[in-house]
Length: 401
Image 1: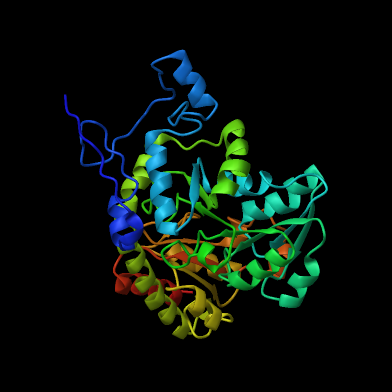
Image 2: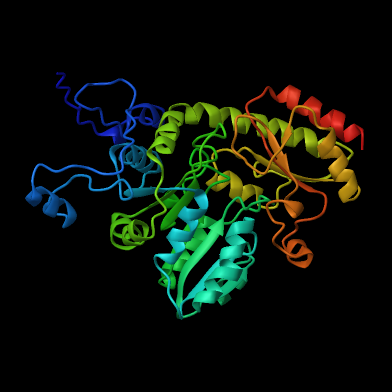
């Protein structure tokens, strides 16, 4: 019987490339090179006293996979290290992470602020679900300092922003909003899904909490659903974990293992995603059948200076409007040969969607127009193919409009 002993290393001293390969690993007594999958729901105890001490917190260890198990712990530890966060909790999906991060710290009579430009499901939570619980909601232009300042009330508890925002790629000043939240005793949650932790570190910019859909860039190959919430030890252990453990948005250990292994190539993939996206954005900006392009690291972007300041790269997402009307836009989408029509993002394959009729179709036309979602807006998730092939596909399709 093998008796392998795990090394105790301080991974904070290593580069992130090394952290993504090595951090968080827990080898069993067999000393396996690749992390093991613990596909079990429960755990056994050597004695009734051990079980009691596990449940009352007097003894470390696992009690139930809805709470945590070794595979989930490895993923949480790795995400905490690369995000430079004190703690993390992984969940069944990105939306379960968003919902839990909000609901665990808000109640009837509280006030909630969110940026107007939100992913469709986040918009639904803000406008349809929270008001049902007696929570007052204010949607604001998060790029307007005066409007932001005026939105705060004495009972404001949580501020939620996406940056870059889905699907227009509007960029919001995280540090500025974090300062406003601290002055008003509110917590700032940043949805960092479109930027990815490779391009932007919200906690380092002053945010209290950051949320992810690990379905996207962390997995990066369109295989699993998953989410994560990261923040301080006090927030995770005292506020989020009780909500998470008793409402049950648990991540499958198998999905956790897939994401854990995908993280080993995360930085390599993100570098290629960002390089490709910039090339594609520059091409689209010069094309006569493109009305407008939004990419954070294009000088034409409205918040270009801010994006360069808080994002190390422009990310994998490009938003653009074609000329003509909705039918012309659909013709362009249908003529694409290499790029797939899909509402997913952060995949190794390039994917494109029409937000007005897919991801944001739960909004009225007036609501869409208010946040610049037009009938010709496309959201492109640039993959890992060679950028010249992507550009040729886009060019051929655009020229046929």
